[in-house]
Image 1 (tube, rainbow, N blue to C red):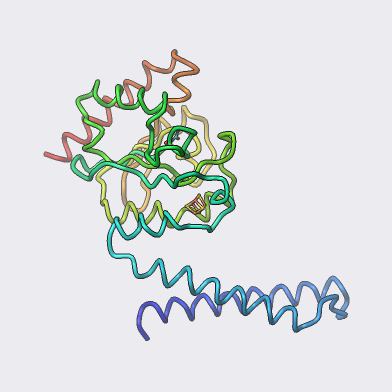
Image 2 (cartoon, helix red, strand yellow; image 1 turned 120 degrees about the vertical axis):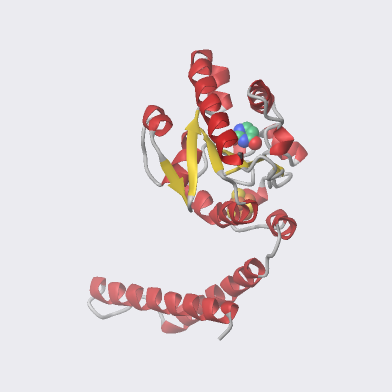
Length: 246
Ligand code: URA
Ligand code: SF4
């Protein structure tokens, strides 16, 4: 069995298992008298199966960052597709072997399709150039590729539906370090809740890549007192990058 078929049949088995579990649960709750007819369930199962195969087929075929970007530009996996103007895939290069991950596009990013181009983005560009990094030499992207309405926090369901794309980006870019900007990016990568202090001071690895956490530039615009500690975080990151890029 090839990789695609193997993966598909694994997923189909997983869905069958989910449905069996769900049926058992319903039987328990309704003492054996199911309040749903089996045809409806059968239909649901078929729909889910075909819908999943489309997504999986698309995703398994991806062999480059450009192909991934095309798939993201057509993505409708979560409800944010309905309100976005543009997807914001991310931009830059793997030259410095650093990937910087923010939260989600804002209004300016949604308008232009480019990450970190608004006020927070301009601050990020300045912070990077202050430590001698040109933003074109790193790859800048976000946890979510579409803008949440009114810049609300991303929902767990949106983060999980979008997570495949970020993981695949990291697979293609193979960075030596990840810089997570703010709590949302840190929680997504490190899979735990913590204070910014704990995140900034901790040593973490995501998919084999060391992760540093610092303040989100939007937080620095609201709270200039954090600029000095953020500067220290960036200096530390630059030293690590320089020593690993030899
Ligand atoms: N804030 C983010 O987290 N990402 C952007 O791209 C812009 C603002
Ligand atoms: Fe797809 Fe991510 Fe956009 Fe949701 S946020 S529609 S999962 S690209």
